[in-house]
Image 1 (cartoon, rainbow, N blue to C red):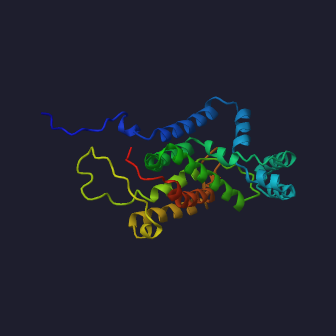
Image 2: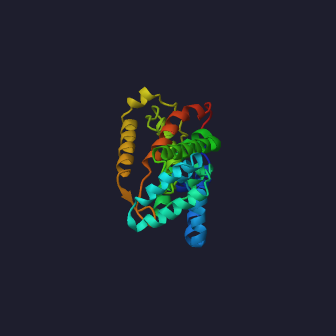
Image 3: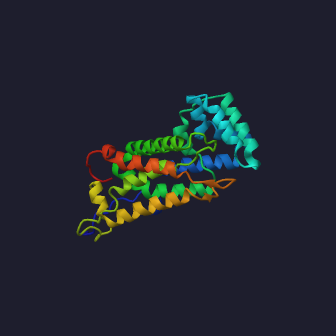
Length: 272
């Protein structure tokens, strides 16, 4: 008699055994970056950025045309080497005011460089996978979208005259990181992990008081907050020029993911 356990079927190589929605999201981000770098002419790429990136000044001018003068003044006060280009861009926005509300979501599809997109893919794989496994692709997508929109909205609110296009999926990924923090730092139940084929049980969400008593969760949250505030004060080579990290967008996404996740987590069900 064969007394060996009934191992779960492994359909993919373990290193690529991510939820399909996470794999698809990573594939889309990498494909768009490859398209921009290797296929599109520069003029088309600029047009793509203008159409899909989130520019705070564009939204401010569309809501209040009187803000156009303030945007032009802010553009003229920048470094002399780039003030002419910024002024030209500002005049373009003033001449054609368009809120482009879709850019509150589509900016997440663009990245400043290969380092930028690969960095985001790594974090998406690490923190998006447990969330997708727990609540399925639709709730995963809803949470990422909510974090993306919230991060963009906070960025526009705090810097309404900025002409710098906001790009990157970091706000949506921050929402997934916050959601994962609500359950991944709990210790495994007694006896779990003895056998390699055991399916992990669904862990209950921790309340805020419980999280504050969880040392691993507190350390993670503190490191995340400090690094984002620190990177917000320096510049990183995310594109052709050094660019400041949009820490405010990260913070907006993280806050939405942290507080929204309990409402979209869904009922308990068997692990997948």
